[in-house]
Length: 237
Image (cartoon, rainbow, N blue to C red; front, top):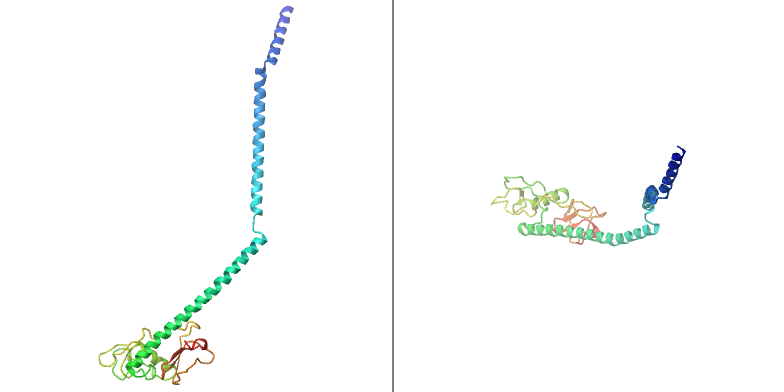
């Protein structure tokens, strides 16, 4: 019995020695542990690097902006562009106003001259109330200076008229057979002060000038047929 126990103990020790000395039995768990440790360390390191990169990107985005020098350069460039563009825009606007006033004066002067050729008198000098029968709307302006002269001027130019200047909205073959000379019974506003009023005078002065104070609008003389802008700076146009 003792001999058997000794033999068993010897065999057990030999097996333990073989197991301990066998590299296959030891390396497998060691390798698995090493691999697991490496994976976790790499994973933790990558996560930390990503967090660090994100923080740097966010910090750079927050800190990124214009410097004072860059802002000053932008302001200077905008000022230079404004100095170039604004005068050109102003000049273009003034040119457009001058072109508009020249067009209005040319059209009205042509209408006034044509009326004079057909009637022998300038519009507004005589009454626009027709002496002959009118089947439409008759003129009402009595002519002369002031508001009655303005009314007669516009009614005689925008309606059919007889030889004496009587105005009617409907023409007939016998009396109201002249005109009309303008399309609308109103004057456009002057482009400088936006005033459409016509100041009518009977001075007969070819050297008529704008009224003191430059009220704007237009000035017209029924004796000479002269029409000007009622602003001193533009009266010579």
